[in-house]
Image 1 (spheres, rainbow, N blue to C red):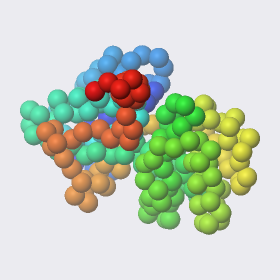
Image 2: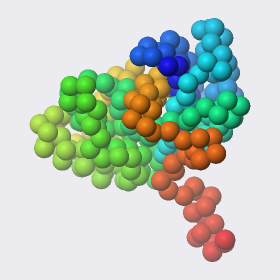
Image 3: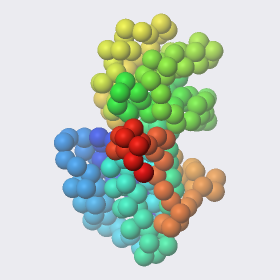
Length: 238
């Protein structure tokens, strides 16, 4: 089974190919360029470097959000466009789940952080028990202080430290240091950001469990309205 993974939910742009249980190619950037400039060339490059073609791909795993509205729309549009010609299934992968899954085997409560602006985060709470990936709290949008308290409560219950990760970590690291009341650690750089390899790998597990959609039904998950929509509502506009 060959799965194409796409990650564009926030600052990081990434594409990967998973062949059975091996990531055979991954292309990741986290440096200033927009996803509209990077994602499609990444997909083209990993296909070229591995000698694969889209007609060989079994399914497309895409980071479904929450995250950047623009980034999610770009990733979703690309996944739909690539899936359409051969009616490939799309595997929606919650973005915080994929971030946490990338830290496979860590003996910590995993708390991915994505900057949702206004001192809020997109996050979730996860842990591993052996090879079992446990979702204690699925994707949420809430203030960083509330998320830290939720992570700490779970950490005390499980007797584990909290590991904070995700490309929103630099934004909230100082706040966490000020309010933390249980043992915690910050993920190192190689575990911190989103990777399409994790999206593809978790996507493969979801696919085998029956989770899939078509290019006609798949839509990103935003969790909350865009800034523009919120401003329009404040002004009483339809």
